[in-house]
Image (tube, rainbow, N blue to C red):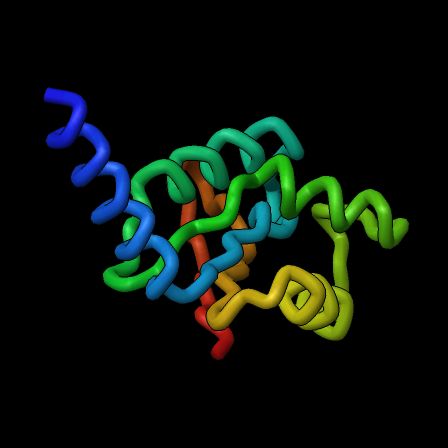
Length: 113
């Protein structure tokens, strides 16, 4: 039994070492939305986003770096977003803006390589 667990752990490590890093930033505030709505929809997106051959970095790590750099996570410029992606050594960076028109939300998402 111990051999099976050890083998499974080694296979999992090999798979995660070959995968590229992906950083998903919290969505930016758009029109007619609150920060709470943006946080909730960002969280839902991030927990359901599974790009093939990529490891999605933990949001705590991403937000920690954003805080360390002195950026406002919901009002970053594109250059600031790119700097965060570079410092995290992410192969792809997923960013977006949340908007609300009447009772419908829309998210404009960009994947930056």
